[in-house]
Image (cartoon, rainbow, N blue to C red; front, side, top):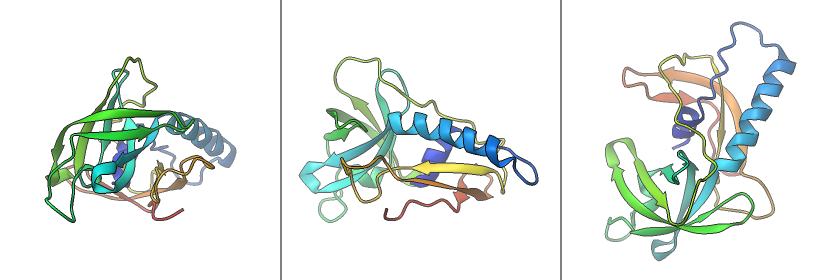
Length: 173
């Protein structure tokens, strides 16, 4: 799930060798500021599921994981609507548009008028093991007392389908 955020934000820093730490810090800060505006918590109330997503278009499309909107302990069916919580505590509803279980991905659509703050989908073709990346999300659910946790690390591997693994995984906070 976290790998999706890496692709979405296009957060590879592409630094060769030893990084200039001040430059790296500035780039990470800019990425995190953008990520905080567009990373949302998702509550599928009817099945008791929570997770994270990223607003990826000004029209309010949200990319999340399929398991966030699916009743894995019961019927295995997807919910039709979810609650979306923004960094500032604003609460909106979103419709589940569809899922791809093979990729554990789901697309949602915010209900209501936009345009919405968003982070565009990045291009993972140029990412290589060792590139710097940032992940953000709500691994234990939304907490109004803090921003979404942020992890900083590197790409560990990449396969022929451009799936990435990194060492900045969001487990707990």
